[in-house]
Image (cartoon, rainbow, N blue to C red; front, side):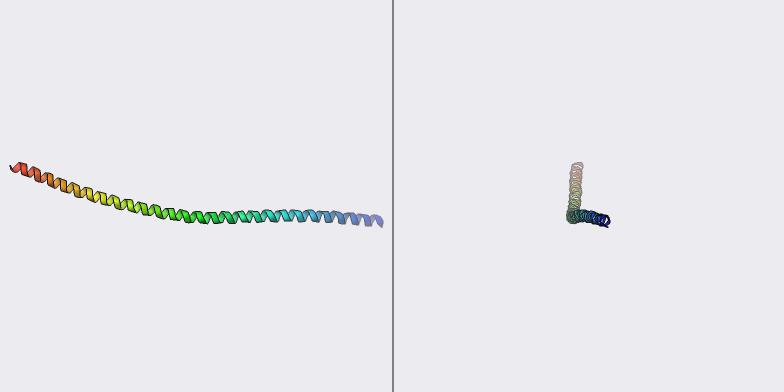
Length: 100
């Protein structure tokens, strides 16, 4: 019976040692899992901030394009008006010299 008892004690020691190792492994895995979750949360927050900043930049770009288009229309209108005035003046000068 003592041999069986010694085998049982030895098996229990091995089981206890194995349980300690498994507990340590579980603890390490839990820490790794927590670190990964924290990194994902950090990345998610960064992406949200990036999306907001990109949205602001897109709005600014659209406003700038609208302003440029309005300036282009103004320049075009002034150019057409100037060309019209110049052609009228030239026509008047030519008509004046032709009549003389």
